[in-house]
Amino acid sequence: MAPKNFEVIKQEVKKAVAAIIEIPESKLTDDIKFIEDLGIDSMMALEIVASIEKKYKIVIPEEDIPKMRCLRDIYNSLEKKL
Amino acid sequence: MSLDLEHIMNVLPQRYPFRFVDRVISFNEGKREITCIKNFSMNEYFFSGHFPGNPVVPGVIMIEAMAQAAILLYAALKPDIAATKPDFFLGRVEATFKKPVYPGDTIVIEATASKLLESSGIVETKAKVNDHICAKTSVAFGIKKHHDRYE
Image (cartoon, rainbow over all chains, first blue to last red; front, top):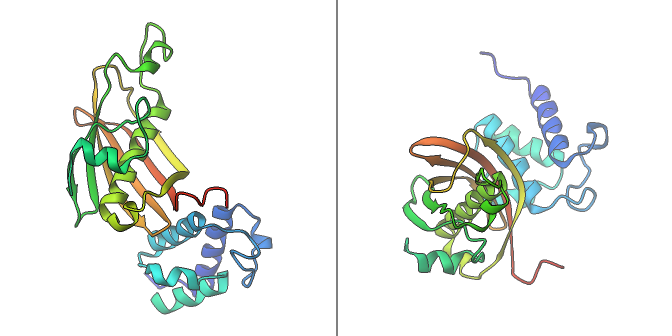
């Protein structure tokens, strides 16, 4: 099976994050801050991390989670791992 | 890890009539898994109303029992944090119920850590009676310092 185009992965991640934090995808820009702008708490952060780990079969270390402050940070982290 | 009642009482903030784990029967640190049991006797307070003449363990009580097993698992895997006696609070529960549980049944709860962090966790649980799955949950919960709740 050919590897997924990273643009497709980005769309999947955005869709998953929007579903977890219950906002429309249109409002979830790449740079909007999870905590400051969207009020994401530690439990939602965990849900996001767990869903990404499960979908892409990767492990995101606990110390990396605070560095994921917006969607773009997740993309950058994923791009290194996939 | 100690598996006795004293340990359960020490870890779980819940007390009678809202403690729904009687014993921890095993803990496997490598598999990040704990197995607990709860005996539902006819004397449980909720059977008189749920339902008169047809007692069945309420689904919400099953969920609570599985969530308490999740707390015990968290405490076993993160003893330093558990020792600070934090508050545990449910964030999300996905539950599937397969079979009813009746007075006299003993449920065996198998809880497996999916992801545990310092301040939150996701645990998958199965509750079985006589090796038949009665309910399954995925429980997401938060952990806060005892006095953080109104901050």
